[in-house]
Image 1 (cartoon, helix red, strand yellow):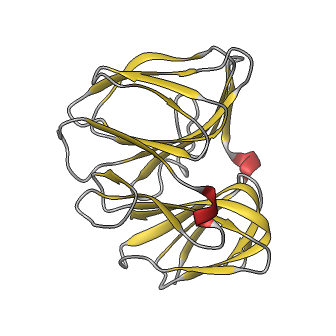
Image 2 (image 1 turned 90 degrees about the vertical axis):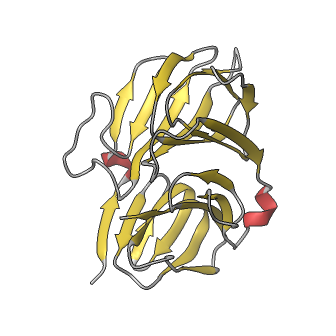
Length: 237
């Protein structure tokens, strides 16, 4: 029997620091819910809005796969590997923290907020050499189909690479269209996070920033209701 968990948008953890308006799908910082610590290997899914000119100062990470997707505005990234980059909508950044990295993230704009989704996935290999990658994904290539943003480093699938047997997809699913999600193995589950619009995942209607975790399945069908912009994490459970 399928294991299903529904996470309503308005039940996420929330912290408004003025310069940062953050929503947490899983326990993070001062937000703790024992029922929402992680979904399989997906540990963090933060929906952050950062005020103009503000951001996260230099701070460390290790042994974590960190994926950043900018939805609106421009994020400025710098790290001790020598990267100084800006990230804009339709771009994705991955960072394998491995043995340890220091980085900072700031809103590049002085007058417009930046909205980003940052996810952390537990790696399947620790103490790797830190690495960084970033690329752009054409929005027209995900209309009514899955666009692979992230895939395993030892796999030939498209997308940026991480040290985990996990995939991240994005789709723009128009009303009346369907997609079938089939896990790579019985040990994988899907965490479906709505960026905008609405879809049905199986029998569950999902609206903006709602999420559904589902595992122990052969497949799940997504049906477009009101053009949905959907992020889909496939992770080992």
